[in-house]
Amino acid sequence: MSNQKLLSQEFQWRNMVKDKTFDKFEYLDQPHKIYYGIDGTADSLTIGHLVGLVALLRFAQFGSQVFVVIGGGTTLVGDPSGKNKERPILSIDEINQNVDKIQSQIQNIFRHNDFQLLNNYHWLKDLKFLDFLRDFGKYINVNELLDREFIAQRLSDNSEGISFAEFSYANIQAYDYFWLNQKYQIDLQIGGSDQWGNILSGVNLIKRIKSKTVQAMTLPLLINQKTGVKFGKSEAGAVWLDETKTSVLDFYQFFINVVDEQIDQLLKFYTFYSDDEIKEIIKQHLKDPSKRYGQQILAESVTKLIHGSQKTEAVILVSDILTGKKLLKNLTQPELNLLKKEIKTFNFRQGLSVFDVLIDSGLIKSKTEGKKLLQAGAISLNFEVVKDDILQSNQAINHVMIIRKGKAFKDSVVVIVD
Image 1 (tube, rainbow, N blue to C red):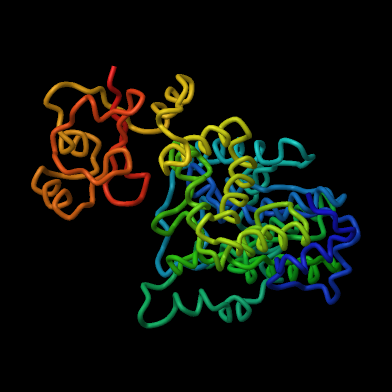
Image 2: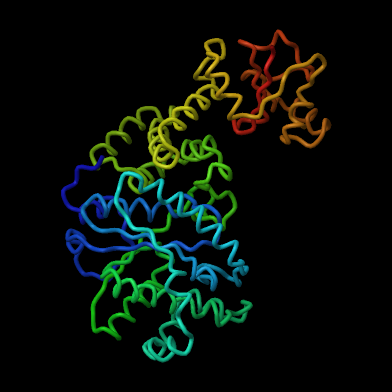
């Protein structure tokens, strides 16, 4: 856990501030009422959202009163930030289902900390259009909206344009900040750096109507250095917090597989280790990067935060089995049961071929493809290159065969020989 005395120091050495309205970092050292908003566009959060939620946890642990606002109302409109075309419209039922699942994930993350969970649908649903235009619309400067980069891009000749609904999104989010300030005296909003314009709309609205100064801060967007895209749900290969969408094993392995150059940044963003502790982790890692010590610490920490200690210990064991660190001959029955639970499993029968297993598991499409992989030495059995396609019972170690296509152990299946 971090032993920093001041929150301003905490955010600075972690390099977790991209934009801010306050002049001095010391502003963060006073307790605040702070909120972070998430729309209900999907039925799960991703590790991209987790950056903001962990930042909010830091505020809570340093004495601020924190709020998470789920955008049940704003999702009905759709946020145009970072999008080059209109978002698909979700039904109210779809949004409500998404909100319910997201709320459960947030409650799990904050299970050891006090926080308040709100849904902006509850105050936006009663907002009347004419009243909004009269009481708030006249304080909103359209020129400021047109200056926003993402709106300018959507209005360019190469774009399909932007609807009035999405153009109005920033104004609704601004109203959220106004309402929350009135109701709860919230004086600080945080979000990803792609939300800077939307957040500023709220700061400006409160200042113009109430002659009152509130603050805003954004966090840097994490970019996956392997793919060059942000850690978000709209990008291919998203890593979800819902284990039915991204298994606990795949979640853990995502962090195991991050590049060495990103370990320091991810430890600072996602974990609560102190500056000295992270420096020591990096020092130990650099002694032999091939052992992936830094990735293991990172993966274990984040997986525990989201999925708890028991599931984390289970996937570490399965990972050790699938990488050969845990010898098959030493597997106990509970460990074998765990392996069968995490990895697709088949029962051995006479005449069963490697191709049968790989086709039935969906790892290859045909025996022709399998033969090409076999000839290329790209199929292994118990970590040894397969020479023949027909499986023999005596190939099992402690009643287990692990068949893998390629090097990625997520492309593994287990065959049990009774």
